[in-house]
Length: 340
Ligand SMILES: Nc1ncnc2c1ncn2[C@@H]1O[C@H](COP(=O)(O)OP(=O)(O)OP(=O)(O)O)[C@@H](O)[C@H]1O
Image (tube, rainbow, N blue to C red; front, side):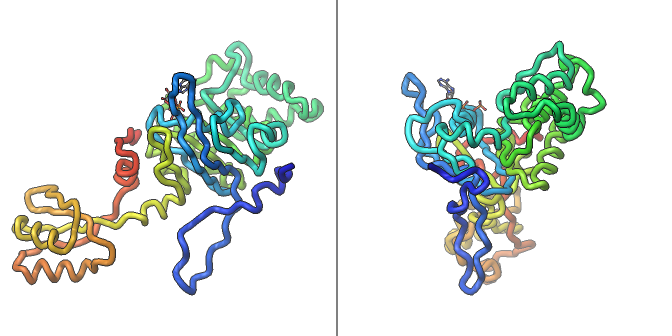
């Protein structure tokens, strides 16, 4: 028998890079989602998710990023016990899914593939109906719960309009209100801003941030890098059913050296000096601008001195941090729709 949700995941920890000697390790957050070798093979031998080891720390806003078809929805369906894995295991709030679903799922709010709403009912009546379908929700408090959930997502002014008159963003927010009818430890949102205009996207982002600030862990899938950059502190990158990287966004960027950038008219000579010092992937970005990846441990100042020493007339020299977008393209081998 696994631990109760309230105690869930206490033994599990996130793995982070080892601290420098003498630097105390930061306390590690318990995990709210942890999978091991999670795999889904659909009939016809289509491997949608392949050996996924996912670790989602409590309190994080965790971005599950990957191009369309990379296995995000399939993973979410397995996490929520909607489909059975072909292999591996998934633990959510300390409970093994799908077996622990009854105990775990009341603590998990989910929004997948758009909310199931009745267009002819008002937003408020939709929530009343959903609340009434929850056997653990007391009737006496229903009106209060429904009003609070509508307030939460900023829909109180439109609460008594029919849902079919709502914009897509309002419908998404109503779906979120449904997920928030009771307090949740974890919110799982599958592409929550899909199809929304910039205003609708902003509304969802504000809500996600507010929920995270209250301590709810938010697991959010997206194929939009922009969205992940703006709200998430942790990220996992999927491509073709496999996990390419995961961890705090800052660590993911730090794992890769900045590029050196040299501005000079002597591009040929500079290219050969850079090459001789092990700078890889040297690119000429303009008529007088070169950039490349320095080897680990190479002091940029020494490289600058070497260029000058070789007679290269250096007009500017510096390093340039890699962007999240460049890092993800590297990890997945595919471009992302930046949503810009
Ligand atoms: N029920 C199914 N039967 C067979 N193949 C499926 C099924 N559902 C998904 N797939 C396939 O599994 C792969 C992963 O799909 P999935 O929907 O999990 O990806 P995704 O990253 O969520 O993409 P999207 O954002 O487009 O939904 C795709 O190749 C998809 O065609």
